[in-house]
Length: 245
Image (cartoon, rainbow, N blue to C red; front, side, top):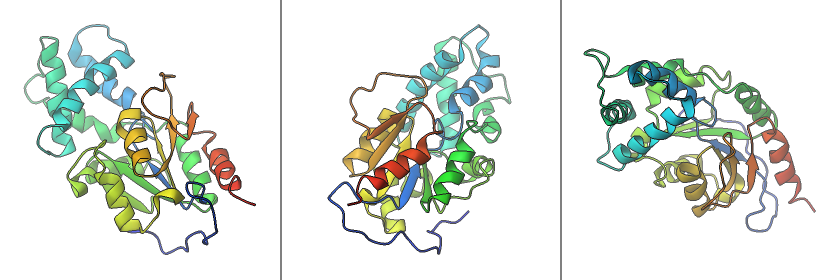
């Protein structure tokens, strides 16, 4: 995994109106966008909840606690996972058995990609785009997930490097600093309005919202909304073609 852009040449400069530049970089959120975060969370925690709770409900209840933990003092993401999951169990009057307190972070390397994600990444690379992953997950944990894609990103920005969690702007600012990219020549792809669409747009990125759960698009205005990543290569081609004379 490289912490710096690859040595391949960037897409040549072309004149384009503001906000309509060609796409040199695709920046991706990872968990929920490329990796099935919801299933990973639910499968790891369901055995400890002791009741029939559907996967989406577990994930929705968990994320409330995770956001609260992330707003506190910075801590490594594996500790965020452990603390947020412990709070979720306490909410239901339960606790992890001794020795299983870190069941959630220990499960993360097993979480699977969405079926179309590896192909979408390969297609993006074939279009000449560089790929960056901007993730709230620790760098060593995310390495196991990247290995499942079959595509090595040109750049990875993890929370431990910017010492903050999305939706704070640190990931995008670190990406811009390390890549030398321009926001108007990048397209950010994510599955969270809160974590990704709103902060990326504020910094001048075009955005693709991967709306896997068909949720209402409120409080953000993504450039494109997709139900999954299968159509992402066409979106990249269309957005680039739109700026041609």
